[in-house]
Image (cartoon, rainbow, N blue to C red):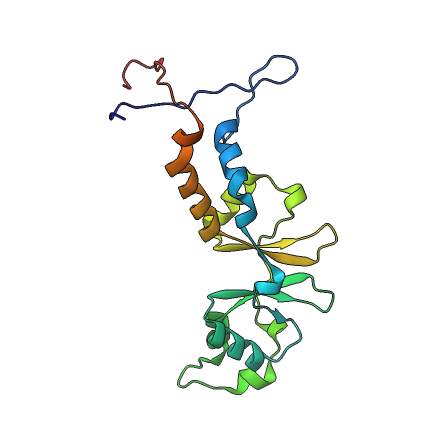
Length: 185
């Protein structure tokens, strides 16, 4: 293929024949859907901590698994927060020394991040997932009753996008179209 600029041209119309603008073309969405099952990592494979656990327990888990951040669940298995090693060490750092006392005194819920994004696959579009993953390395996934199901990671999303970029022409013919703006070739 030469270095010409190519546009993927598509139109989607609603019932009244008005054009609907979409973030993804149907062709791109179709290829992403082929990989969408790989975006998700089930809860059974995810390290997490309970909100009422002692902070030292979370410190040990985060140190051992070497994740930057993990979900925090309550007793009902709902995601109630996120916790990172930096959040814990911030509580340990005093003005003139490091104290391990917060590890035995505090609970996870005293330190965790409580404002965070989470998604439900039945209520979230691919476009919304992508937008949320711009600022989050992962998104907790919950079911309709709020129970933790697993995570959606930016890394897996990027791998799926890589699949699309490298395989698009194996599935579709791309035909150049003339751009209405003559200044752009």
